[in-house]
Length: 180
Image 1: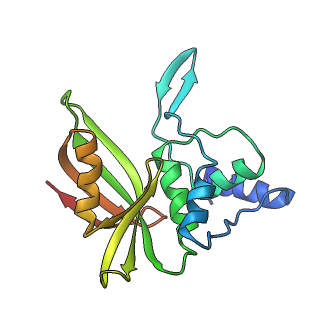
Image 2 (image 1 turned 180 degrees about the vertical axis):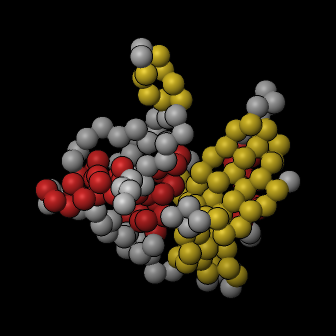
Image 3 (image 1 turned 135 degrees about the horizontal axis):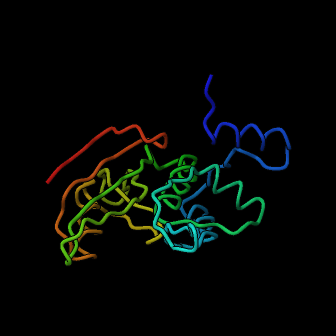
């Protein structure tokens, strides 16, 4: 039988009873934005043998909640912001299907770049149409007609050329993949 590091960590946290592994969902978008503002963006960099190295670890929303409960310093970038936003928005009544959206583009230097955001849909009572929004370290944005329009907002802001995007569950199961 094999154990992943996260399963062992969850077991230890539950054993101590000091921290909750449940995230109480937000009751409104405003509450989700307020709770997300407790996070501070920082790059995915760790020090290994005296050198700063970029890493690609994606911590879970539960990891973020444990760190917040413990009042410990967090190293959060768009990955953690987006997964935590997804967990918070799952409780907002007029929002449906919050998902993790990962997008990739070619930046102005010719390098591949990317971003994660929480994508959600909602019914716009003013227009009578289904709309889309995003919530991440860039803030809350609403009013997109479709996911591709949301993708292009981020890519245009970075002056990049679109490569692809995926929409995934909080467990990182890919539901949709779109290439340029």
